[in-house]
Length: 129
Image (cartoon, rainbow, N blue to C red; front, side):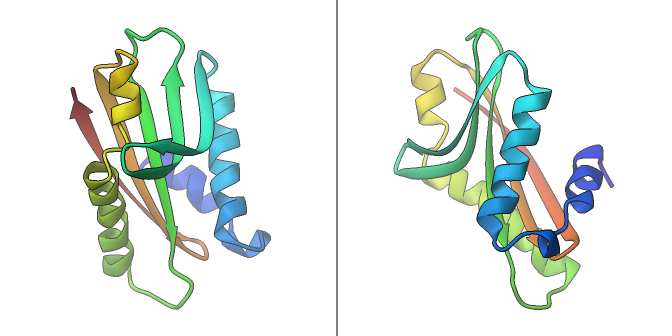
């Protein structure tokens, strides 16, 4: 289990009314961790809107894109992992990194996060321009 998974598991879906609040908590946490970055939610990029985009102020640094999905019914760890992988596929197919690439950022780390109550799965990938 990674540090990110441990952090996300400490934030319970039970504590909030919907996934949007969970997404906001992830965005706020990102803003606190990444001081030299601009953190935005629901950013229009490529062919859609990514949940969270973290843009470096110094364009020589790398960017981040985070897609969050919830599963409201009881599910397995395997299904959570599949959903997190689906987030990565969505980021790629909708070309969410294109906005960062147009700004001169060459490397984008993408995170797919799927959760169900206190269970969470995180998938990661690096996308190069």
